[in-house]
Image (cartoon, rainbow, N blue to C red; front, side, top):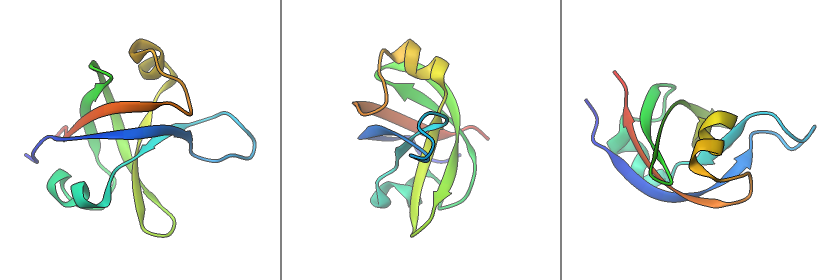
Length: 92
């Protein structure tokens, strides 16, 4: 099991064209290793203190992010463009 990581990140759209769709939060590069490496995986954690589950994704150019569903964002009371406190741990 990986360790739990904690960070503050900005919620953004996966793609800006067309607007809408999947929301993601970029994971700081120094926390990718402790989470389990730069690969797709299921994770659980919190957004603004509210429990959620999601999947990590590779970003072109070397980035790494986690997807956040509309329901998870709604439960956490945050929207795209806002900064949010996040904790993550691999779900396996």
